[in-house]
Image (cartoon, rainbow, N blue to C red; front, side, top):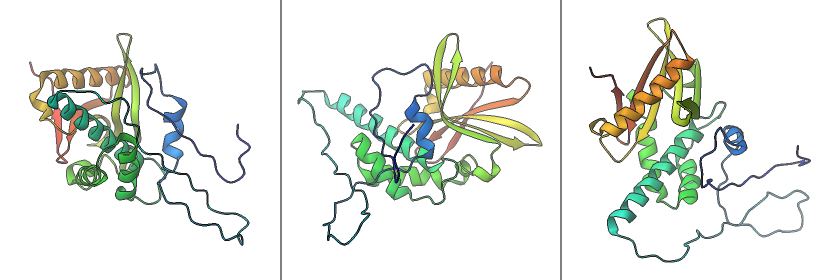
Length: 228
């Protein structure tokens, strides 16, 4: 419990190891307002209650290491993917009154040390895509969640986005996974991973239809189906 009278500020770092279930931070994140770095203004002595301003520390660079170009490129792509994922997670949070993707991208880019304009461009491409729109329209969803943990064979799996919609008069679950840098449907490991996610959700929702698809950086929805 908090005794804060005006506002409560949280900060967090990504854990080194995945938890068995959602952390307290993941549970509170949909209800939080992303912090936007801003320069502190001068105090004129006339205001009793001033706006809280937090200084933005420069990104920690760590100890310089010599790494192969391909490894660095993969790391940059991974961080960009996480930033775009974070933007979409914030934007799709239930009850958010207005969506400012540029502001969300700025906050996410600072978190993952990537270019804010690029993160905003990819997130906007997905968010505005007619193919993807129904998965983010809260008025048309029966249920939705981000970073949803499910268990399969003792392993905790984490689904980027899970939604339930009405299709042909029946509830249908969509398991969605963001893949920005590849043609995910061409990689067997990605397809197998998605089918495993779908099977895990099917166990939880017996008798209901469960489908799975990749959402690409181009705003495409690519469904994954069993191949006999």
